[in-house]
Image (cartoon, rainbow, N blue to C red; front, side, top):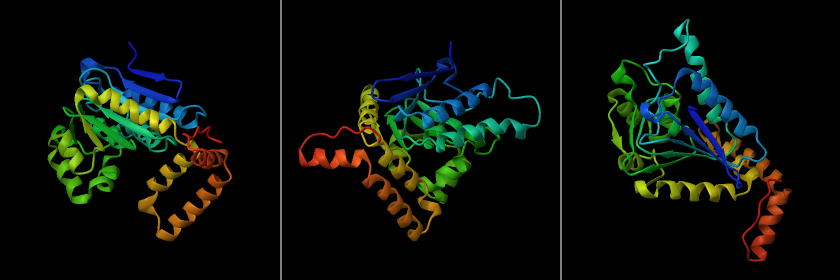
Length: 256
């Protein structure tokens, strides 16, 4: 059985499913390299438009599989593939959605946080559980959490390692939407299809600028907006968007 499943549909939606349901989709050491490869493949593709990450069975991801051991050698070397996968996810140029079913803890929670949007079923649970295992936060959690919810709240989650509900996660700004478990697939599919129908060039540029927001001054952000808009204004997608608006019909964007 493959530990990671990848499916593509005609709209350009790529669904990556962690497929170790009997281990709550815990990530083994070889899987980090595979995740990095898939993230880079989606980012570089000319046909993929959206990446959805989810887990099979009753869990999203319970983090790293601590029962299988890691690579031989210095522990620092073992963190290389973990960090590379986290970086590759952050650098995916297309919109990314975490579809969280069940538990998302440790690196599994940070895998969700690394996505642009998080949709959770009402039974989903989140935890920065590292501290309860005698470990510190990894997979980008120390960078992602403060940007999402502020330093003090991030420290609370990381230092206590408490489990929080999907609703609580939404209230503090971690989760975008909470839906009934029975509606999770449909809701995530609808969002993915809406994103896939959008203008790829403009969306990629918007995502990049928003991701850089905390590291730029207003002047730098305005310069980036001007550069991006200069590209968009001469694109076929912009012409199509304006034409469709005038003709009162939905636009059909081609990414050119």
